[in-house]
Length: 289
Image (tube, rainbow, N blue to C red; front, side, top):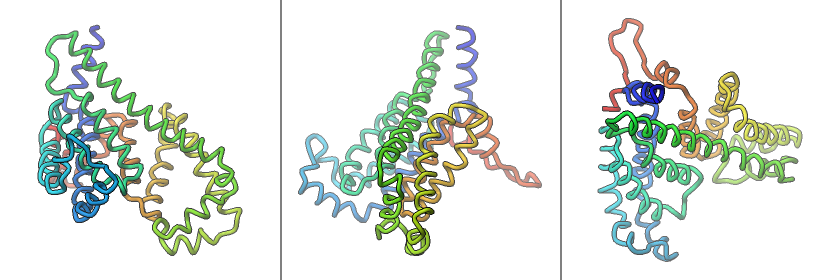
């Protein structure tokens, strides 16, 4: 129990809890961007949702587009500014539900991932911190369990996606990649003209690279020696998706998930920047006041 208590002190220290805070605050920032970018479409999407009976009690009143824009963004800003707690995390998740119902006609995988982590964030809180040794240790184990659940969820997403592609003859022979590159609202024109018109061997090679990456990710991500070997290709893979397949929100969402697999010390080295003359310091930990 003493070991758990010692670890608990480290976890609730601002430095060691920063990974949790930054991870969930990143989702709040992403959701703010989504609301701002899609805000002009809310009225049209709301009408579509009404026609398809997507509006239901008790969310019929609070799913009004004006309500969502006026209430959700200020609450998310509070989530960015203040240290997260159970009540704030629960409120953000509940307000996300009407937003999701409005944009339901145009949701993609990023919205599903976002919703699952907003829900997980309700339980992954260290404020207010427990006072006794026993409850503090239990709180530490709870947060560690939430992190593990998030990691397993990400690994499982890659596994199921890779398995679906592996058993698909269209992916194995490159036809799926060819069809994807020729969908106008996905691939950018120059990519469609270059890679889309490549010979079959190139399309098969790219298809198998995607399949192998998605199948290897849930295996290699758990070992420190191989973690970087799969995270770096993962970042490049999702950058490609975001830049050339018109899915920037999905790319950002999946890359942001990688923070859960990073060590606090590594994250600190990446985001604590110093100028060569040490005239200023960008300290992200100040976000976790």
